[in-house]
Image (cartoon, rainbow, N blue to C red; front, top):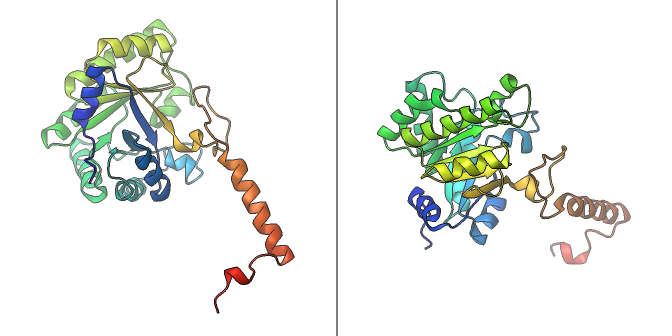
Length: 267
């Protein structure tokens, strides 16, 4: 049986200069394929609120949603490090609630780590989780649960003041003990500077090519996204078109009586 990767493998990749591959995925059949290919990590992101449930943002996702989808991804995989994304208000209310909710994510889904958005304001919560053995990934830059404060999905760190704040947040998160940090939607120079200044891995999503690894949402990779795509997204396939063609052909064959035929019936 294949041994599952751990947070220590992430650190080894950083030290060896090996790029880390991560994909956000949410369902059993797709995640099974991702794991079979050998992707290093699957992040069960709260972006499932948009990709799976059709919300405008991630704020409607609750803990039960995250646990359910994370558990499915864990069952689908043998190799990838599985990270459960903590949704809005499952943390940031009290340390006790954060511990309880993160503990449920680990126990009920079987994932190996969790992710929290935010910088210095997450310090006490991260420390408390580390104390009981829950590995934490940080997330700074454009943090989707803060979009109402940001005024939408906007690039962060474009001014010197913003850039300095994000650098300070990255250093703080490293000091408090996160095993890696997601850098989202920041200028590439800033992503490079942060990556070179940290001993822990950075995972970029719209943060340039100098991060230690990259993450994209599987729907974006496959061309399934129904909304306009951000600049950092690259479509590696157009599954949406293939689905349309398959459904059109199915509809035509049912309407004309071509399907089902004698090969698709029981005697």
